[in-house]
Image 1: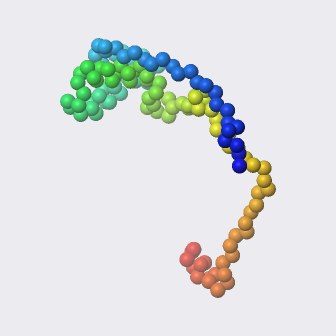
Image 2: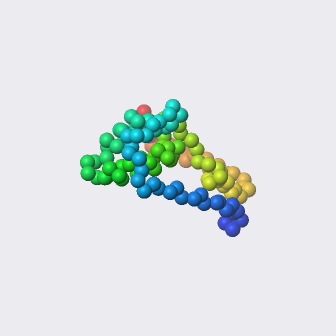
Image 3: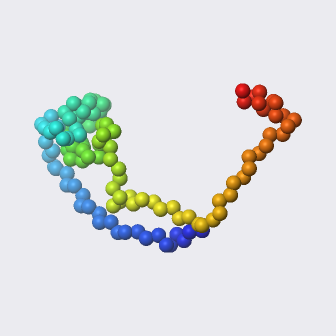
Length: 122
């Protein structure tokens, strides 16, 4: 059995948290460029799905601020999809014990029921 204590982990620096604005700008004032994943149409579609009176206007503005500032985390098409950073998620190496592989021969169907099995399969 592999030794679980033989695994080595690298320390990861924890990034500083993003400070949220006390009064975020209204969501309709955002301008999007050609390289942005969010567009005004996508943003309007998401906000339209928020039930009425569920969030206040200030909460919606704050939500939009967070979503737009972290827009690389959102994917709309397969072209925008990425992979996890190997810095945080290194490739997993499966420990293997050297051995000789074995193969078990298939279980034969008894001659007495062979025709019955063939008819079921067909």
